[in-house]
Length: 313
Image 1 (cartoon, helix red, strand yellow):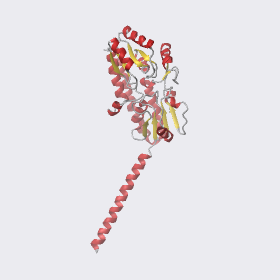
Image 2 (tube, helix red, strand yellow; image 1 turned 90 degrees about the horizontal axis):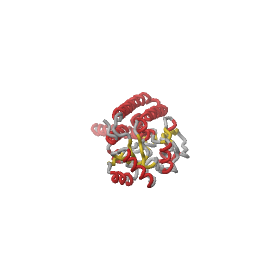
Image 3 (cartoon, one colour; image 1 turned 30 degrees about the vertical axis):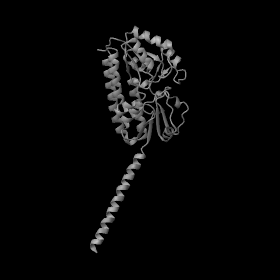
Image 4 (spheres, helix red, strand yellow; image 1 turned 60 degrees about the vertical axis):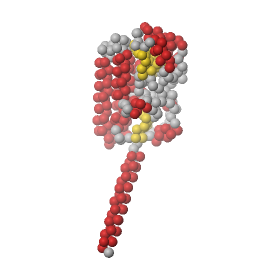
């Protein structure tokens, strides 16, 4: 009889322990679900957020991998996430047409309001106006994250937004911010060193996404089309770029993975120059995602290609 009671007692203890483990697992799952959802519209902003927040928030990059930022429209499912998010940060400067009439109940940050934007110069605007009549950014270049100074500013803004959202993690956010800023400072340094002395001074791309980079590091940029990479190219622009290739002794022309590359490849073949890809960093490719590439990785890859194209010492 005594053995029977011991068995019953052991079973009760086992059931109690099992219930406690299940409840603990449920609590952890609930904790994970209850993390605040923070939505970032572009890869560059998402990369900052991922490094600053670590595991504090459920971070969502709005753009699906491999989709052009200029033409993307959020799905109903993504709009549901936007409405649930206590913090939405979008790039701004007219890059995302879907934000024009955006109305959300929680905090929405237009990052372009906090950084240094550049206006198109007269020759750039002529090309842009010809190709991109539907753009909302008018004379403003929206690709500001390719200037590392703007990435520094965006890092400070996102850090403060995260502190406001979860003050208890302030020290962690500040420590992670300092590490990210140190990375940006290193990138800026190697760009300046690598591009300080180059045989050529002009780079040709299929669409005008790299002017912040060219202005910061002192080389010229010529583009086949304006800001929207998939706009139809006029014959006169093909002739113009063919002449630019010859005039500036260009050795390589560039296109991006999210854009049609047939015209630029045809131009390169006719001019007998190389063709390669550059990443404008509004989004990433599936291959970039599989390799777990960061802003730092892609900027370094871009630098290798630019330095080679400009024949830098």
